[in-house]
Image 1: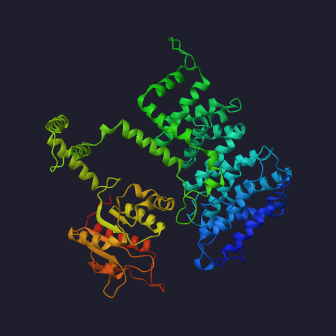
Image 2 (image 1 turned 60 degrees about the horizontal axis):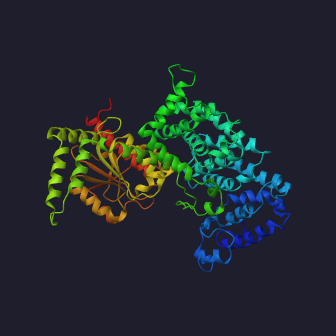
Image 3 (image 1 turned 30 degrees about the horizontal axis):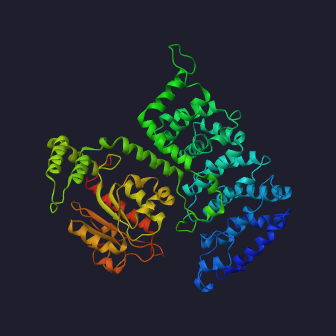
Length: 591
């Protein structure tokens, strides 16, 4: 691998294609030749190749895959081809009890599984690793490999594996990593409900679980108790204490977290008939189970509960964990900007189910102004089209039936306007727009979102709204993206956007070192006009073509040798100076 380097990555691939073929061995001895290389195999399963340099190979990477790498999935990403050979080799080995050599099972497969579980552990259990970092790469690739190797978990190591898995669930993990941890846990639970089932029952009754942990426990339990793997898991229900699982799930029916509450409803509805006779009629003599029967009937008959159950049960029944544990699936998942798998998070899918159910059931509960807007949009008629008289009458009658008094409309609009002027803490927003449309590093955008929300900026402008869904953005912004208005503006549209803001009365202030820049401490931000604070690119600053749209440039005085600050730091200092001036002029109430 070291000899191949970045200039000749195809050397590694050609070598691995031959080596893996040799490791596979012959019938009756499959995998035996690989025993001496088990440490290297673990390392290769987590290995990430550098981006291919076009000059280093002849033809495209796709042509290369067809001509040489025919034994790996065709959709394999360029930075995963080496590990794909190794993972496909391991996947071709027979299962335990179906021809797998005992020594290969214990000295190779068990060794790899336990080592990968250790390798996937964080050094700091309270800190989420940075997406794209070496530790992140090792984590996600370890768990992907573990999913494929889950069929090699046997009774000899299942207790140790179970402990390691649930310790991992306690870590703060990106959704892309947590997805594979959950898949692995579901697979092991199907085969060993007496081990994993007991652990799930134990965990779900705890009151100190963090939000990520209980979300994962709910997803796993939903797949095992409600979904298509229900029969596998409940086949040995005598070893799984269903009363304990029910007791642990029931309190989550009142959770403020809609996701956990929604799955709890499914679990409780599925579990109650397994522990009590729900067909028994209440004859006035309340026995010890009457409250469970009453709860079941409510969940079973309530219309909202039925809608939630129909949506989420369908998801759990269609989710295919077995397919998710194949190399073909692993290497077909779309990759993120760093070249690692970016699967759709199960939690996000279920949350969307809840949103859909709510909108179906409560469409008429929308705010007054929203209903009027939708009604007018739905009722708009093209003045250039001929209209049927009956249709006109129908529309007019319908509008009159739904008409809302003018005073109510005015009050609704005034309340909506007042809400827009205040942040989630109830404080009035500052007339400051932070424009970060030239910044492309997600951690900087996440940090700026947090700073802008803390100082009640009215808006944050970024180049791509999709970054707000990335784990490293949400981690660094600490949820600020949910509480501040965020607008998208591409770099190619920035000049037009700045000129539009200027025409609306905004003062455009650029944070940049130019020959005419004013020291930040000497600049007086306008008190009676909104301000747009324009930040430059991470390395180049504000490109010259945008400086013509700027009213003033300010620079931060520096006393050291290095002549530039991180753009997030520059933005934070500038926002604070803006806020400090408004506090001194009594424009901001900090009491």
